Amino acid sequence: MVVAVAVVLAGCAMVQPQVTWLGEISESATPDSSDPAASATTASATPVLGGVPLAVGECTGAVDFAAGSLVQVPTVPCAQAHSWEVSAVIDVPSPTFPGSDAIASMAETSCEDSFTDYVGVARTYSRYAAAYLAADAAAWANPALRTVTCLVGSADGGLVGSARGDTRLFPVEGQCTGPQDVAATEVELIDCASRHYYEVFTSKQVSGKKAPTAAEEQKLFTSVCLAGFTTFVGLDSGKSKYEVTYFLADAGLWKKVGDHRIVCSAGSPDGGIKGSLKGKKK
Image (tube, rainbow, N blue to C red):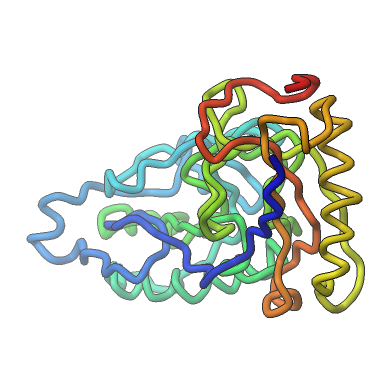
């Protein structure tokens, strides 16, 4: 079966979880740790590992933002699977704790700007999420911690390599995903060894300042996706039990996104696939 589906961005809204003091950037208000009611449930929170602030370009493991307080953040080589990468460290020149609302407001602006500078595209059009770390009132006594640490990455982890200059929005070859009938920013990446829905098997950069016309898009699908499917699976797509899907930004978003690839996947909307489809011949 062949299903020529262009998975394009639809609204591009990043779904962010509810956050407290340390957390992902969202529109949700953060509690003020100077408020007795808030400080009763918010312990000392610092963006440190062994007392040393994180630096731009460092990558970290998972961060439990829902916990509301952290003492240590594990660093991980960016060449290995990780969750977050530091995009900026913003100094806050205030000897007294400005309050969590002020910190959150600063993070919302500064980290959004640093995200665009670091990744090369606005967060709305990126596959990465944004987050921040900041000290609370107790940790503010340490001048070295009077910063907002901006992060880019994914709460799901599994990222390999640096996010710096990575404007790709769609999955890359060898990655497996969940259902693809959602906005591109909401496609879930799944370990191919676990049960998944689709596997990206090839892609091609599309040149030009304008998005492909409908006719050009169909040619790309035929020459890249259908031809690539036969090579990858070992069977013509018309005789296979698996379908072919593709990602491609539409004309309305072509100049806004940095990912101008056609990205081809093989799989099934019913899921249940385990392992790679390479050479399956079925």
